[in-house]
Image (cartoon, rainbow, N blue to C red):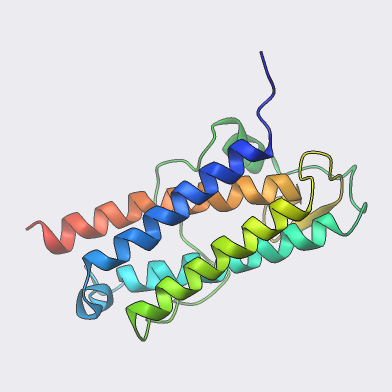
Length: 175
């Protein structure tokens, strides 16, 4: 059995972020701003959350590649399960660390931000060997991730929110 390497996860990341890029064209700005319920996020806020978090994850990849610190520090047991299951559990996760994401100003900016992230990750993966990188940085709740872990986490996070997108679509646009 061959070991899956960073190229696999890089391609998967690209496929998932491309879904987000392509899907934004299916909505008007008004649709992106509409919330299915008072206390829920709009699809535009989901996009903004993905952009903000994935920028952060890319920065963590960059930092982990620059260090050999924390190599002996583990992931939290919840993170171990997420990675073992290759995805977040299919539940609504309440973000208790930050307020509501901002609403987007326009669709073009969403696409530009997502494409910038895609290029940023591509450059990191082209310029570095994520498979052999040993340094780790700390996730705010899930403890320590290597550069490859951050790449995988970024993709799983976006994939998790595709389920949220589907729920929002069903609530708002398929009634």
